[in-house]
Amino acid sequence: MESIAIRNLKFAHTIPKPLQILDGVNLFLEKGDIVCITGKSGEGKSSLLRVIAGLDKAASGSISLFGEPVKPSDWTALSMAQKGVGFVFQNDALLSDLTVKDNIAVPLRYHKMGTDEEIEQKVNRALLLMLASGFADEYPYSLSLGMRKRVAIARSWALDTKILLLDEPTAGLDKNSRVNLLSLIDNLRELYKTTIVMVISDLQVARDLNSKISFLIDKKLTKPMHFDEIKESDDPRLRAMAS
Image 1: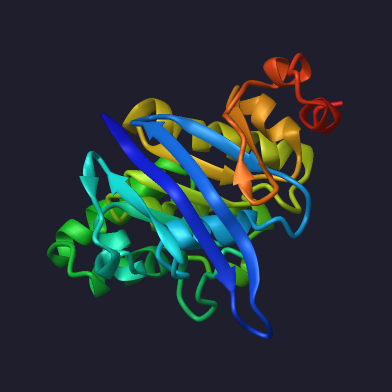
Image 2: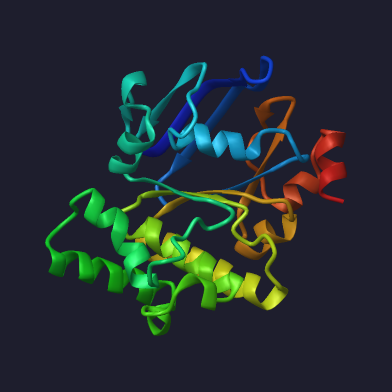
């Protein structure tokens, strides 16, 4: 069964003037799949994630989760989060005045996802999975960029997330931090069959994950392919991007 199916998705900015961003995007992923979405700057990659997550409203198109169509009225950030779709912002969006463990606990408490004891268990499990248990009582300002990104992912995953949307999770990281973070992200897929959609700028990220890559070109997504397949593609635009 497909964990996510997006058909003919269209999205446009209306301010300061109408501008078509996505025009007929299709994306189909099975449980535990991972795909990296890339393309030129300004093509709408982050907008695509925001629309999927319900943070921005699609002009038209449909989305199904785990075989169940999502009603347009339910395609909102709150409803999608409740359905198991998690979003991690590029800037991590941690609350500076809360400790790491409280940052992770806040959305769990907001959504009333268990007793205090159950929430604590969810927080500890997420911290352990992202190798951040030793920083549970620290504040975001005292953490490295790589660790803040781990905490942001832990916060989203703790919400029983089954589909994780990551916007440039490795941006600004050095090589060692990037490799470590990608290893932890891959664990989510391997251990928990989390479906992952990740926006990237560097194709090396997809190669490190052995992930398929889909390019956002002319407001549409190309068919997901592995790096070596892209290099042999009949489309010169794809070959150029993989060179």
